Length: 168
Image (cartoon, rainbow, N blue to C red; front, side, top):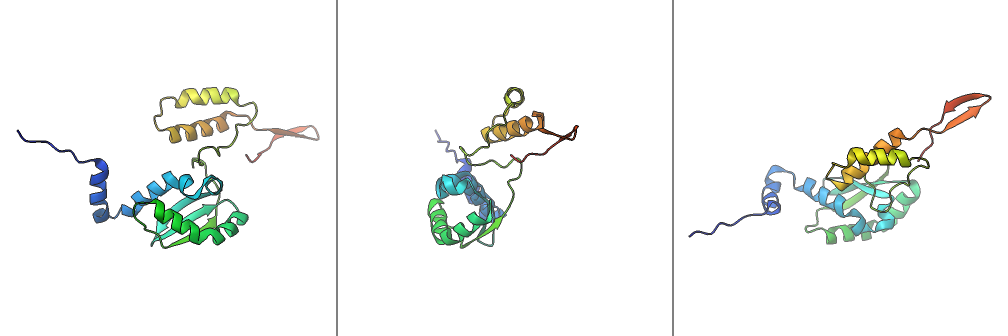
């Protein structure tokens, strides 16, 4: 009898990735998944890796204070990132201030608190997203639905009511 051997998908992807040019994309994906564990929760709460281009990692930073701090930590971060990944692929890092776009998952434990009075919206959103299997996607969709269902605060100015956008 002959023996059948199976090859894991991970091994197959590692074998074909360089030939098709998506080795960097796989590395980026793994880095994004491990970001908080590599750089630490305090840094991960204010940053996110954006992309890698020409062996340079571009990182989105919440504000100028963090950008300045990260400039001082750059050599240490480069070393940590390359040590944590199976194969060091980055030689440099660039930081830029950027907005946290909707749908971008923050590191676990740093999610925005729910707006007061949104418990009904949370229940409805949870029901709608219960069938989504990916936990990160489910959490993001739930946040978006809650935000859409939660009434906006209103201001009364000289007897006139108007909606007011309040940053969360």
